[in-house]
Length: 376
Image (cartoon, rainbow, N blue to C red; front, top):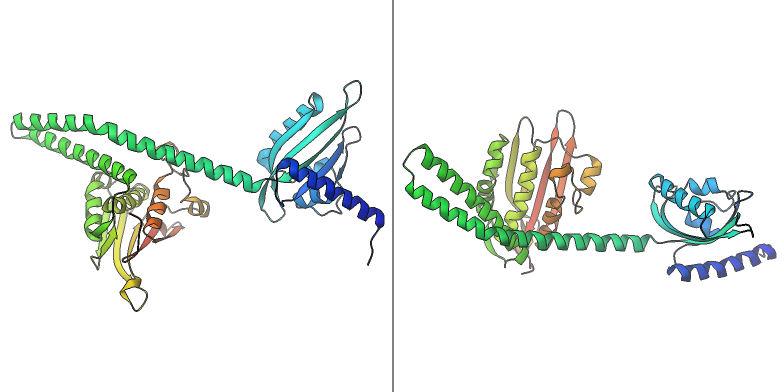
């Protein structure tokens, strides 16, 4: 079946030009589109690739308004400003924007164009091309997040290291003051101060251990949980949070005790901060064997709270680095750290949450293999 020779010839020329544009934009196989916009008559002409790139049907009438309707609402102001600048006084347009496809999918597009003018400098037409750069944008974003996390890790380790010396000096001075204090309220206050400094020292040491990735060994899971409760005890008391435990087993797990405590501390801190009447955090430990051999056994730790619960959006993004719902008080690294450490143990995390008016709260379940080969 043969088609219209003129249409086929036009499409062949379009493909050649689109391929040239693909090379200009350094794309590899993504859709590329050509366009021409007559500024005087406000008429546009698009190649077939331009329609496909923007999720439009090739039989639709090309127009500036139709194209603008595909641009993400948050990017329209930027794109309009750039186009207006080039029309008024510029020659070259180079701008990135997101496309909203009919399916709801978001894709990044890069547009480059030249402005043609008459001898008096009045704008006549804009001609150019655009291409899909989503993969490049995602790669750049992932690299940026990785660099931010690396910097955050180095800063936290350096800060913990610098804190240790003055912390030790303060501890020694308080110990001397405690020896000179007479029995009574003054001595009790000094004892409480020394205890709190010991907690700060433990947190500092845990931060350094986390940065150094200490070697795994067999640890008692329940003992680590109870140690974590002692570590965050003041926060639980301050928030009037009741703790309920259900340890039907006391399993041994091959891991770094500091890293396991880091996991538990992040989750329990979030649970304590989120809980509301009745303020309660529950921790349950079970041995979970899913097969006939001991090699398939795992430890399941479930931590639940009576907080307001998480919205579907928060639940979807909770493990992203730097995502937080705590405004200025959160770093957005807590659950990301938990995810990384659990993955290191070849474990799994499942999160269930509800925002129902009467039944609300969040439950986080950790499934950690008891005989997994993990990184040292």
